[in-house]
Image 1 (cartoon, rainbow, N blue to C red):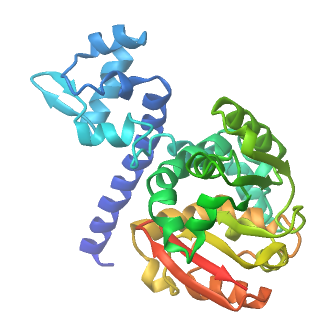
Image 2 (image 1 turned 180 degrees about the horizontal axis):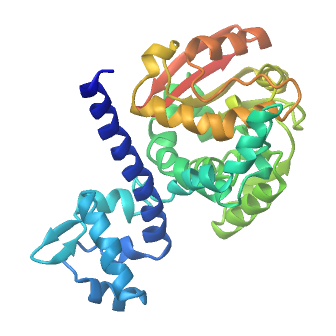
Amino acid sequence: MNEAKLMEFMGKLVNDMGGAAMVASVIVGEELGLYRAMADGRPISAEELSEKTGCNARLIREWLSAQAASGYVELVDGRFRLPPEQALALAAEDSPVFVAGGAQVLATMFLDKDKVIAAMRGNGALAWGDHHPCMFSGTERFFRPGYRANLVSSWLPALDGVVPKLEKGAKVADVGCGHGASTVLMAQAYPKSTFVGFDYHAPSIATARQRAGELGVSDRMSFSEASAKNFAGQDFDLICFFDCLHDMGDPIGAARHALQALRDDGSVLLVEPFAKDRLEDNLNPVGRMFYAASTFVCTPNSLSQEVGFGLGAQAGEARLRGVFQEAGFKHFRRATETPFNLVFEARK
């Protein structure tokens, strides 16, 4: 027994347990509006924050103390301050680095623990629709800041000749659209194009329709309940898969259906979690987060569907390329990337 190594690991474990506790604390703070109430950057007492938010002062002091111990807020002469950098991540939902809403996804790992254990002891299957409802809103809120920051400004321009088509008027499918955050962003940016979002989860489609109506873009977009292998329509100029292909039971079948639904000069935009091709190269903080999410959400969902390919959230470029080559695509390239995303273009 290497005692130094043991103590080093115990320190890491305690740190991780504290981090898990803070995720729960972030969820509470976000839902109660505590971060938003501190977003002006001014020091505030527990009593003042309690009065401002209508929450119990004693519990607010304990919550603030945990936030200060974790470096989420600053302790200034006995008062608490949310610095502007932390406010961007925790209080500003339109910020490109907002993550507080996405903490709901992590919450489902605990809420759905018994279902995941049953899947591990059984056939590995846990369907997307069988998760706690906060999974659906949390997933949208986790991915939406990245889409806002990158989709129109860099991802679409990285594709060959796609933006001019969108500006003139293109026909676009968003497969696995969820609540339609990505679909709406494109519709807002390109008013001459038409967009249709597809998802097999009926409650998500209902939410997407509602959002489109509220944002005034329903005249040029629609949403339909359909799987990635049977969605309707032909001659699409662009078919998008945003962070969903790896969740599908038959990603090759989904890519093959997209190939058949594309115009001859059409393109596929594939956005997937960032990953290298080898496990050894993904043993880092980003890989840790995505492998854990894949264990609880992505891979069980794939195993719940026909074929059950189980691609996983850390598939990497080589395996994704293989999926599209097997489906019949002749051209597949990495168009761009972010620290959290790989962005590919596929063409006939």
